[in-house]
Length: 279
Image 1 (tube, rainbow, N blue to C red):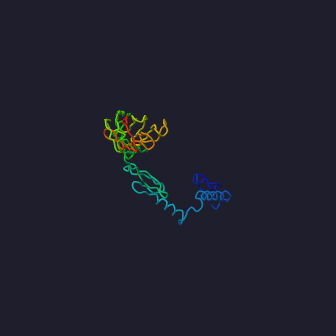
Image 2 (image 1 turned 90 degrees about the horizontal axis):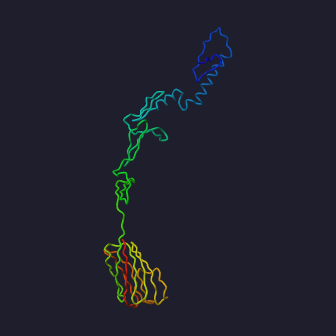
Image 3 (image 1 turned 90 degrees about the vertical axis):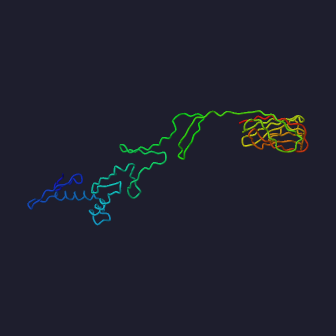
């Protein structure tokens, strides 16, 4: 402690003391300097306008103490040194600020989430286990839920390629129309077609994909001998300009495919088609 009549003040680090002066004591400068220093220290500690908008400092302090309270599960002991606590039964609650005051909230477990009780001040948030066994799956078949979790998984087998070659003919004098081709033994998803005509001395190569997009190339005859006609249908047999038989894909069937033939002009002979069906 410091004796303010000794010319100094120890406040706010320590409380000051004062010697009681009597009428016989001589008044010296220390008797004035000590109290003056104490007053300056108090003003420095309180700052400017310590009462704020209250009537006085005591009223303001009382208002601040009264405001230290809480709503369940938050509680406060009040007073000048309040103890803030959260009820033990309120597992998962947290404190957060809303920009104006502190309030309470809590973690709520969503689908597939588990919240364990806090241990040592920490709450553990984990993803709930699914029924899937941790493992490496080959050619897997999986099920995914709305949260992106794999809820079912099973290994499958490697897909095998099925293929079959079928040979058919087409009378080139036949009018335009459909030709159903069978013998694949399965519903194809693609085909490669080689066609030639016994009277034309030319050939055609074409392909069809799973969506039925067909394309091909064929040698020409009577137009520019020995050249190729690109971007033709999957079958294109040309006797001469304006005399052709062409075929386009119509459908995939349970045992093969259906082609749609278009005849233009006059053309004779037999077309031979070798078709490689794929699945």
